[in-house]
Length: 237
Image (tube, rainbow, N blue to C red; front, side, top):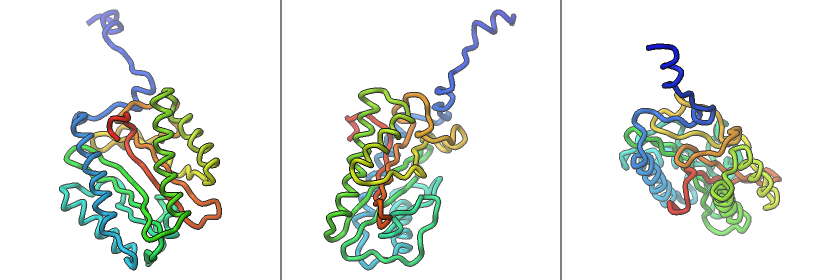
């Protein structure tokens, strides 16, 4: 083949396309199935959490729920975090032995794999009654959707989405934890494709390629709340 034929036949993707490429097993149906099973597992795990439970026992229970649902424990640890541990960055281990109180806050963060496809999701929950815990948990999910709709409405870049999230979190009275800056998701493992964050992405993210993470923290560092899900259109919510 001549050099001229080569130059006309080969197309080189731009940087954004390289970042958003997927593996050979990627499928829309598979990714949605993994996402739906992840959200269902979060609800089931939350329903089994009770005051008086030790955090380590909740994590063991969560792993059992995932395995019973036919999900593989996948590419990051299964996390259920109670009380003061809700402040911690995800890569920082929990303080051992924390017990969920009668009026308390916890969140779930799981990354199971369903067959070839990655799931990833998180949400916060309150047991008993506590107005500030309830507001923080509600605001984490509200901000997630606010940022997601900015993406839909404006085609904002990943960088712009997290700058906006930081600004709105401050207006809400919280601080945004940038140790959880969003990441790729794909057929397993996405890390073989791209390990950079959504907050650093300089293009408009594509649907079904990214996880948007929102971790709000009390400015006085007493507690936090977390919500994450795949960037998707309104029809999926």
